[in-house]
Image (tube, rainbow over all chains, first blue to last red; front, side, top):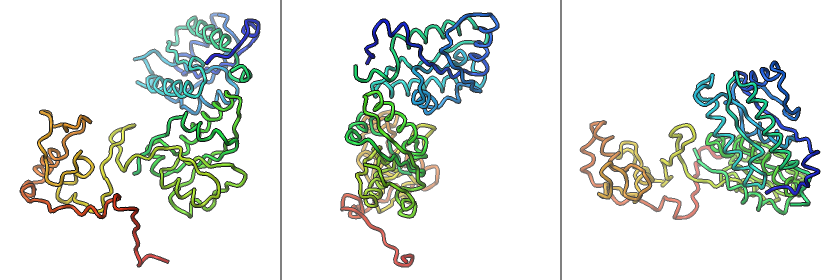
Length: 148
Length: 220
């Protein structure tokens, strides 16, 4: 289900995106992106986690309830989790919540999991652009109900 | 424990369609352990329903509560439901019945209650007791033929099993009577396999109507 967002609205809409980032990889990558003076959209609001294995369905849903238009979870590359398999557990939880969101009429693409290492500052910036563009195209999570 | 599963979200949304102020009540005993209706699952479901209704342009006000046991009056008593149009119970069917008896508003089931079972591994639950009212586990090495044998045979096996010892019913479950044979052998009680079990008293099973247990010595 897509919101009926006009091209003008798509260009001006500034989505709020919550990024749950693992301390050992994505958070460090975001830090590196800053050190490298890479530009990425200010729409990304980072919440640092000790591991993406800490991600819970309720964190993701509450983020949407509290006003996020998109949520991303960014953890270590598969096979490289600091805690062995926290990122694989997060992956299953993210998929489960995505399925549930889709069943309720909310676009699953608003929630995404990414894997990257702490050395991938430019990849973090790329992901920030990708998510911002994607959510901007989808439009605000709420606010266009009459168009549905 | 009683094992249950959350109803499909669309079924729950359908039940809630006519309401805009609802109390979600979780149960902190069996269904919390089987991760279907505890405090956390109540929070997740409430969050999902709020999001879905907001998205549909029909916001709903949901408050959340979780009580220790929905099957006991003393835990239900302190629960306040004034001002709500309905209650969605995330307890087992017993909890739904009890809440519906207690409150004068509609009580809706958020779960499909499944069976009495155990935790096989994290995230996997299996049925191990049918509550037949006439236990035979002393004769079967602690393996229940009523629930674990597809035919509930009292003198098995029937012979309908695969080469690797699985039940021919195709459920992937091991043949209960092969398991019983192996267990009795381990226990040195194999001779009990030669005894023929008498016909089982099925009148104590749930198909004979709702059952009530009374212990006069502890009644107040």
